[in-house]
Length: 95
Image (cartoon, rainbow, N blue to C red; front, side, top):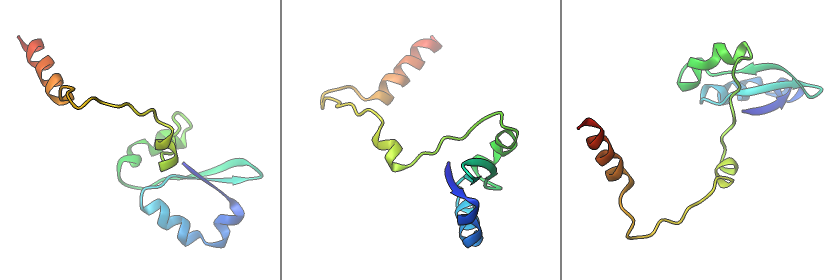
């Protein structure tokens, strides 16, 4: 979730709302304290907007820098296909 100050929001609220329309959730802060959370009105986040507004859940921002911190695993070229393994396990469970 992105964070902007009230001052930044006041400079160009239309741009902030355009970001929210594209699916971004944005926290608005005053003196470092969150005073508002702007959430998209539709899409995947919309299901959770009430829970976020109530403070029951928090959305975690996912950016390319977040993805860069995820561990990477080298998969050998001769490794079996993961999808085939999962389908085989499901077949075994059905028997």
